[in-house]
Image (cartoon, rainbow over all chains, first blue to last red; front, side):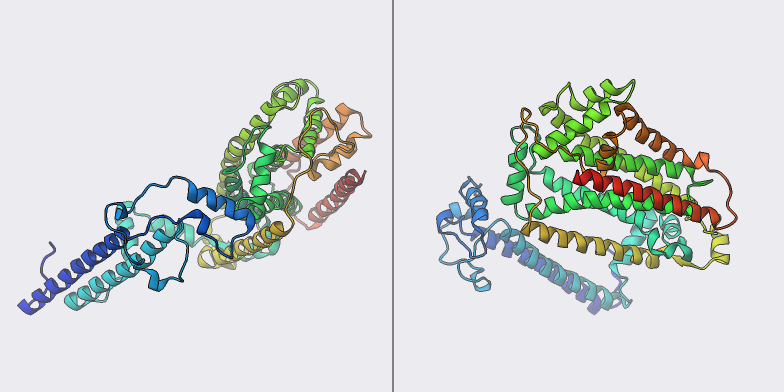
Length: 352
Length: 134
């Protein structure tokens, strides 16, 4: 218990009042939520549920979800069913209680309660201590800084001066490439949630993504076009650096890592192109690996390594998928880290 | 180049918040473009061709657009040479800072390089388009 700062018995009892009301609010919130939980109606009959917003292709998903066995989390199995949903006065009649509603209820009412409780605590603190409230952001930063002493390196990073010659538009190309990589990572993960990397299921899984998954067609389109965009921006960035001669001493290794990143980006494109497993993908990969096979000395080795055998098969698909999703991303992140570190350390080259 | 020298002689802006906000606006711009592409993708999806059939080679087989130039080149040049040209090209590209080490004192080298890039890109783009249409 913190020491009593109030000077008079009146102030001390005021402190007790504020503490008591804070605890009371917490208990009220807890009981309210238990009450709401206990009175949640069980999931509705899937056949009677329909909203005008559903497109025909999407109701099938929701029907499947609703008819599947769901654990009964509420206490309504043991208590008598209520006459009416207690929260109905806030709802439009007949609204679905889907997967998001319990979270939405907790989030809205919980946040309101927490803000109210915090407000009371802050008011009590200001009245009793007669000091301005130190904002929570300042408090968090000081808490972290006490333990890790980050204020000096952090201010060094944040205050780094950027020369004005580096503000022209063609200096953004590298950053654009990096952000497109992030976009590809995010959309790629979302696609990987539904894509099946076998010859039998790949094609159908992409059709599923484009027709059945909510915004699946959008995510696939972004992934497809951002891939092309990333190659264009990477090349443009390289040409900018080349023309300005920013590869010269002391920036040689930066250039080398950049060329490696360009090759990795093209490898991304090559491996990703096979994944839909349609005619274009299959035969383009056949042609591509055939070209790789005509390199002297290592040609056959390269061809067998890529194709996992002498022909493009399901093994090829698995290998390309692993390359596209695990190996090339890890390599790219590693080289990007080195590339950014070097740029940060050396700064942008001053033009003549 | 030390930071103090940069701050005293140069006109600079601080990374945070100025440069950070500039980069943030670029990021928002890209997100907006991505959303537009997404919406267009819902209207006109990327789609698929026929399912893969290992026993049925289609009439026109082409690689992705970024390899079309090389593919077109391979139609005139013997296979081994055609494969070695891009490999040597990439090796020379990667080692270019060790080839061109001369310290620059005028704008002339930059103009020469810009010319090389312009000619090179024209050749590459022409080869790519040619590979695309044939």
